[in-house]
Length: 425
Image 1 (cartoon, rainbow, N blue to C red):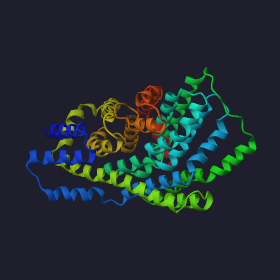
Image 2: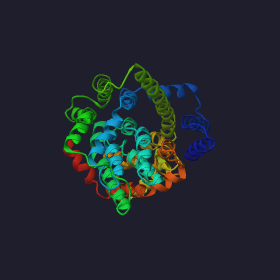
Image 3: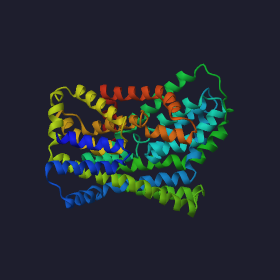
Image 4: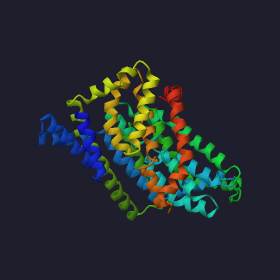
C-alpha cells in the first residue's frame, strides 16, 4: 500500500505539471502521513544529507566545464575537424554529427548540452545541403544520448553516489558501450542514405586535415587527460571535474582566446542554474529514498522480482523493460535517484556486478531521453533545429531501434562491458 501511495502521489503531481523535485517531496509527505511518522525535522535533515556529499561536487564542476567549452568555441572546432575527415563522403554531414557527438561526449557528460550544441550548428547545414531535416534532427538527438555513457558522465556520478558504486569503474566501463552506440548510428545512417542524392563537401587536402586537427587538438586532449588521470590514480572523479574546469578555462582564454569575462560570467550563471535544479532533485530524492527504506518498499520489490534472481539474464531483461517504460515518462536523474537504490539489492542477490548493472541502467535511461511522449532531448532538438516534435520523433525511430539493439547486446553479452573494464581498470 505504501508503494501505491508513493507512485500514485508522484504520478498525479507530475500529471498536473508539478516539477519532479516538488512531486517527490509531496509523495514523501503522503508516505509519512500514511505511516504516521510525519516530522518536518526529518524532511529537513534528509534534504541536507541528500546534497551533502563531496563526490557530488563533481556534478557542478562538470556542468561548468561543459558551459565553458561551449562559450570557448570548442564545439565549432570539433565539428570542423570532423568535417575535414568525412565531409566529402555521401551523407558526410551525418557522419560528422556522429563523430562530433562521440568526441563532445568526452567533454560535457550531458545529453541535452550535446544535442543542443550540435543541433544548432549542424541541422541548418544538413537541411541546406539537401538532407531530410526530420531525419537529421533524429540523428542529432540519438547522438546526443551518447554523452552520458562516455566519461565524464553526470548520470554515472549520480548512480555511483546513490548506489554506492565506484564512479571510476563506471567511467571506464562506459567507454566501449558509448563507442558501440556511435557505431550503431554509423551503420543505420549509412543504410538510410546509401541511395540518396545529397550535396557533399569538397575533399580536404592532407594539409587542411592537419590544420583542422591542430586546431582541435586541445579539445581532443581533455578526455584523454581525464581518463589517464583516473586510470593512473592521479585524481578522483571529483578532482577530475575540477581539472576539466581549469583546462576549459585555459584553452578558452589562452589558447583559442574565444572566452572573455562576459562569457565566463554567463557560463557561471548557466552552470549555477542547472546545478541548483539537479541538486534540489537529488536532495528531494533522498527524502523519498529514506521513506522507501523505512516502509520496506525494497522488500516488496525484492519479493516481486525475487523468483527471477535464479536467472540473472531474465531478471536483467525484466528490469530493463521496467526502466524503458518508466523512461518514457520520466527524466534520467529522478529515475536514477528513485530506482537505483530500490533495484540494486535484487541485482546483488542475483550475483550481477553492480558496475555492469549501472552501465546498463544509465544506457537504458539515456534511451528514454529520445523516447516519446516526454523525450527531453527530442524537445531540445526540435527547438534548436526549428522543426516539430512529431517530426523529430519520425526521424529518430531508426536510430532509437539501433540503440535498443546495442542495449540488448550488452545484456546478452556482458563481456562487451566487463572485459574492457578489467583491462582498463
